[in-house]
Length: 185
Image (tube, rainbow, N blue to C red; front, top):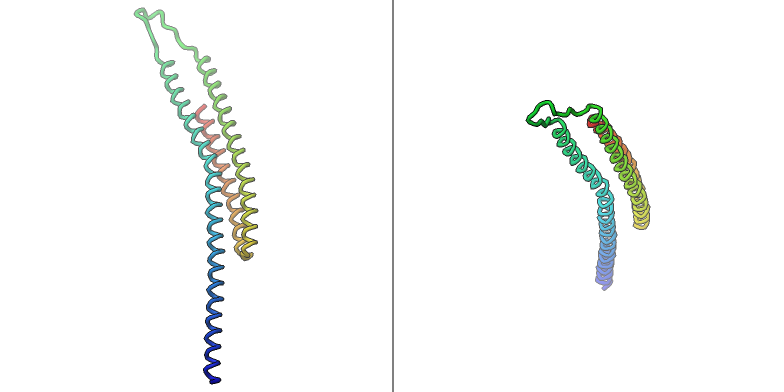
């Protein structure tokens, strides 16, 4: 009898331990699912914030291409010589007038470029504040869920890398704008 009583208690203990493990696994799975849901939400917010500067850049390029096409057409019209039946009545176009109009176009182009750069910079500032808030919320969620310090350091390292990537992109954009202004005016 003693032997069967011990066996029954052992089987109850094993069942209780199995249920405890199952509850722990379910809780861990729920927390992991919650983290993934937060990360998906964060990704959606980040993609929304990066969409504005890209749209602004495309709009700027479209305006520049349209302006260049108009300038080419204007130059073709201005360079074409119209004559009447009598060749003595033709009017030559003054080069100073062409130079002045080129300077005015370059000035307008620079104003457009500065305006676009200013709007992109404002968008980047807005993104920075949004991403800071998102980063803080993510840290709060991570602390709530008990993520390890290693994961937190990895996230902070990634944020600093993203800052360098953003700076490189801004420098590249400035360089392209410089080249556009230099060679198109």
